[in-house]
Image (cartoon, rainbow, N blue to C red; front, side, top):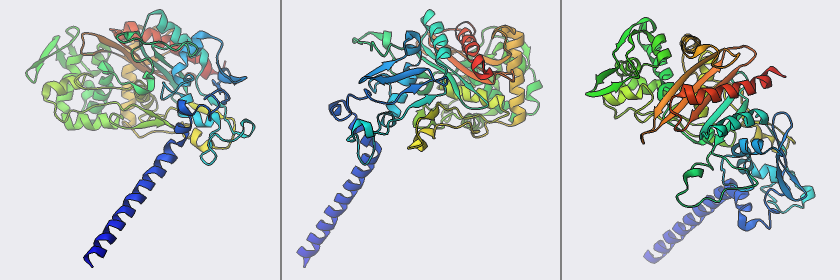
Length: 463
């Protein structure tokens, strides 16, 4: 009897293991089948990868990638090819978040039931139209390349959510992938779309979050004056500023980017409040555009002392920010507290499987980041910063509300930032630019942002 019971238990255990394993395999099959079918070892099945895949167009119908006589062909302009590389991708899947990686099964006509076994003439390949303007991307790429800049630049319509321009550098021509040798840092980060998949110390651009928390949690904080003598001891450590600012209110502190002002605000607000507002602004939150995940921005002061909390309030400590997320914060300020969610896929050639592709088409409001009154006050401060401090011609003919940042990276270098939006009704553009080792944002990131909005303005104005 004991033997029968033991054998029964063993049989049930083996059956359980079998069904658990089967379930795991089915889940893996459903989620990874298209990827497995297109691995290099299976290229005999996928007819040379993208050789007969659907085309990819920009918003104006300009061909960014297409298949011609069994070969994958890219735009004829080298600057365009390099500018949109991280968005479109190359023949490989090295750029994991590119359209040719994330939507490869739609492009090649993969079917879960039939795989890639159908004859070419019966495959339901898709053509994909993106929201980006290839010429705007090329203009921004050329401006970054002329200065040897590495980093990220993004512009999107804060009314509709359409990403108009998205550029990541370093980049390369898809016709000439780099041969990277060990120790060669020229190509460091080349396969990473830094608009979507990177995070940088935000520097003074984070002061927008600190200011919002103070406006909502401290009575009359916008009108209160604090004293800056160029440095202050907080939590036993020196917090330094670029220069003494004497008595300043929040608008002046934003314009002159006073570290002392916002460091003291952060300590006064306290870690729980600062953490709460960072979370409300989307830090530590997951965002996505269809199949493409956006890297989380990071803010955590749960273990910070007063000195750490002070530095976190000015965008240092362990703060990290994703460029697209920072553009979304600008969108929230422009839209009265809630961002319009960005998207990249504009259209597809067929209604079949349209659900998976169009999941990225948003244009809908995201979660509220701040009160409408707070957004309006921040917008006024950012507008004053440009008009009275940077100079109202900084963005050419456009009226901008912006905040620059200079973020210490930790290796003795500084990244240059600018985030903001245009207040012109016919140019609802939100933007974020981060230049690695760019130093002051006003000198490195702002000129790139100006090029970007000047290139994108005709797109949203319709001419």
